[in-house]
Amino acid sequence: MQLKWKTALLLGLVQCGGGGIPTTPAPFALENQPKVPAVHNEAVLHPEWDLACPTGSWLTYENFGQGFMNRACTTCHHSDLAEGARAGAPLMVNLNTLDGVLTWREKILTTTTALPVERNTMPPVNTINAWERHALQEWLACGAPSNPG
Image (cartoon, rainbow, N blue to C red):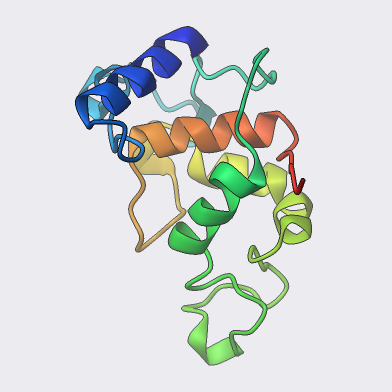
């Protein structure tokens, strides 16, 4: 499965002239996702998106995680936001630093990458597509690595 999404990414870059990450490579379009029945009202992690870190994963905080968190999470989960400006997000859940992401890694996985997608509670306002959801799960499964060098 990992090879399929990387192939889709490369094809998307070629089609776009190499200018940026495609928003939804075809293999991860929502209509192509398997339907997973709800089990006792609990969210189920995507069965094809193994939580083991895939060999050769290239996702880091710098090339994916930081930008993703800034766009999708920190409008509510930022340490500089006062309680009334967080849209109900708990004061202790801050995702504007790698340390914050690592602290809440498991919770992020269960609230953003579970299936069926309708069961995900995060992000409530900034939508993320299937490719981003998959990349987030891979990056977090790999321990949310950073490559500051």
